[in-house]
View 1 (tube, helix red, strand yellow):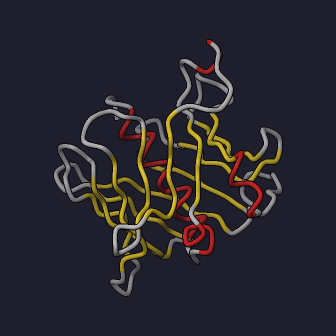
View 2 (cartoon, helix red, strand yellow):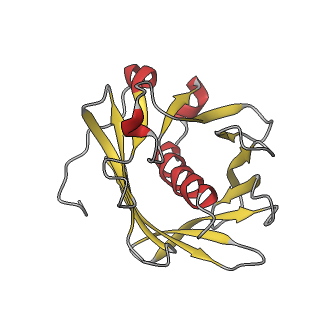
View 3 (spheres, helix red, strand yellow):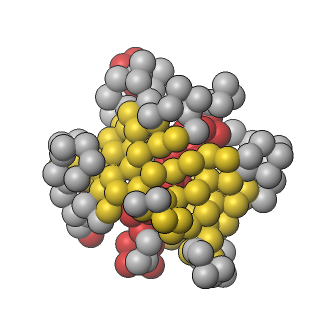
Length: 183
């Protein structure tokens, strides 16, 4: 437990109300919640350069390191041991990436629209959606305008995926850095 918080495990019933939320627009801390109240995890950018991130869910704690400019990668580490690398396929557009395990197998494919539609998703090797990130939240209003937030939807295969929580957190981190041109 890194943050001092205890997180609830993700339940199949959470799919209808799962969101990444930014409680404070002035901080790069994001909470994964279900039904607006149950906390399932968080992602917090801990470096002022936004290249070091801590993420936590009930399934584990990860540190992400964003390395490289021309061929950017995001390394996912547990106790300083690399557990996966997000390899960006198109550095200029940032619209495709592969999450690769140390043994070389592809955990999932990250795909975003070429034009700003506010959506991204994890896909399996056949191109089937596992986890979808949709811009915004179910509640509207001006309070959410300046915050980076999204709704998350799962397919049955995505919910059952053994690396689901890692994909949830590293996908959200990649969404945040891709949406912030200063990074």
